[in-house]
Length: 234
Image (cartoon, rainbow, N blue to C red; front, side):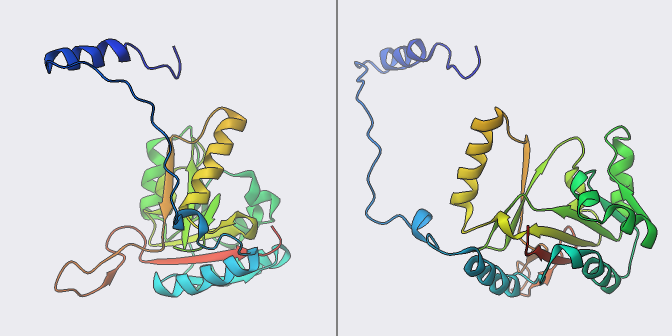
């Protein structure tokens, strides 16, 4: 039966019996904490204030950042892709690319490949050879500069970590203070649709490490460079 724990009482009773003691069943009350930073941090921040927090955080996570209106997105994306040396480019199979005026633009300007669920392993090989991967952030954590991705058959997770550079398209409306609010949104999605992505990726700029002699190395695994493009009117 879905969402039902089977044989729980029998199992716990057996443990109590083996320990030679009576099993005590006491109700558990949710504690009321005096301080709740997971909720209170940036609690009343506006979207513009969250955007400012995200911009500052991007400086700390070695991620380039810009804000644009939707009508200017194709030209802005063209400039960013040019900075990283052009294609080949790999993207999700997502109707929003076409809706935002990027579908034909990408194919006409550079060698561009759209994730194809039918091709399975071939997608991964193409992503490995791509110079740039482009995806869309579903939820964006301002405090940590993290983009959240819900992968599915049309949105392979390798698009964001196998190419040399990564570009995240971020609707301004996707901004939330921190992971606490992201978890709330994911729960809302589950209660509304009855499901949530089986693979949720949290990406905070390019990977980095200072394990060896405390010398920071950016791009240890995954893209060496990352760029966030925030779309102001979405």
